[in-house]
Image (cartoon, rainbow, N blue to C red; front, top):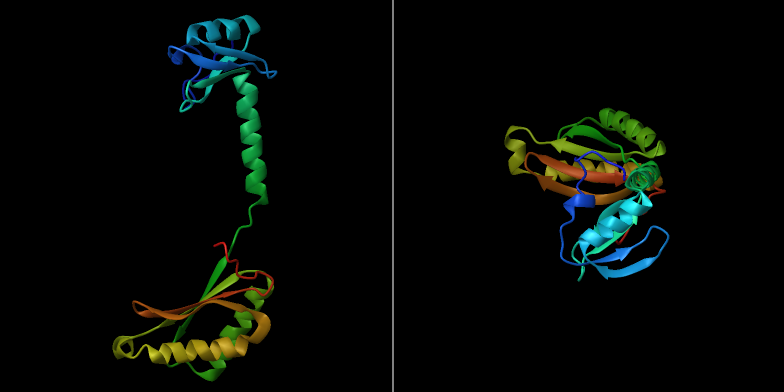
Length: 181
């Protein structure tokens, strides 16, 4: 029987103290409904661990397996899943309500570079002082930016007033907006 660290959240071996359990073997053998002590004896004779895999089932299900190997395979699957995840990078471009046209052109140039790299871009127009009472000026700037971007980006979130900012979220063209999100 393998002794593993007690940090595992899965009850195993002597920690399973139930009157009756459904016992499964590592090779698919079904031992039926037995007491947890009897299942533990079977596991010890095979030199494996008894692991509680379905505590909510009626009766609870235990499996005789090599827990170290099981844990290794779970970690391996988790690493594979993590490798396949796409990391989304959001670049933020800050503007003001009274920005000059040449400054907008400069910011658009950077936004196009970010979108070409596959990054998401968040445009923020900061409203200073009395500009907060007229958020339409910030929306106008973002609509001008949207027009200048053209087909280089897909606007996921239209210009929206939030606090002291008017925000707009733009995705690269290859990432179409998904309906499931």
